[in-house]
Image 1 (cartoon, rainbow, N blue to C red):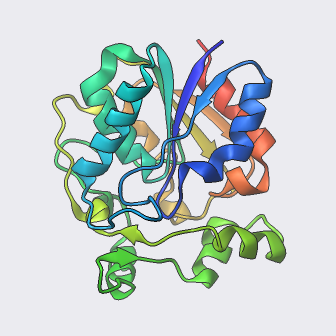
Image 2: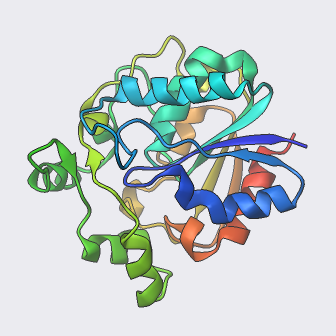
Length: 239
């Protein structure tokens, strides 16, 4: 049995990965699904990147897990990199699932095209959060879903603190130099980033030595095919 701690992406909560977790548990593994500071529905939204990373570390420490696979989706790549920088000796493997891979001093906005940064700024609410317009969600994030599924999934998203996109990460060790084994899970129809600056190899190559696992699907495979995502996370996380 392997323990998986899966970190959600922006606009999500851990609960939105419950369908995938059910299939991983059915295969005989344990799964933990924290919700990060800044994404808790009844919590403060005035949260930066370091606080979000610390909330994941606190969750892991409170759960008392050791020798676990730490997976992160999209923005969750920022989080698992920060966690691994502090808890490397406890992590069996890092799995970046269409996720950002930051080097020391980088922020998430450094890894997206300039027009994305402008878009986020134009969409910012008075409380410092940003929400995705449905049309962008539909075409770029969940392009393999029916209209009904895309709408029901969109209704479960929550505003995301923009400081987590603009804060720069502080690392003692760059991802490529981390001794923790690493995998990159790439959904090949994911257009959340432009294909010319796609998740793989544009971001995955920053990991140095890593295992590549690929499968068909959009950025939101957790909604459109949770069973396939579970199978691929297990493949990415195996010894």
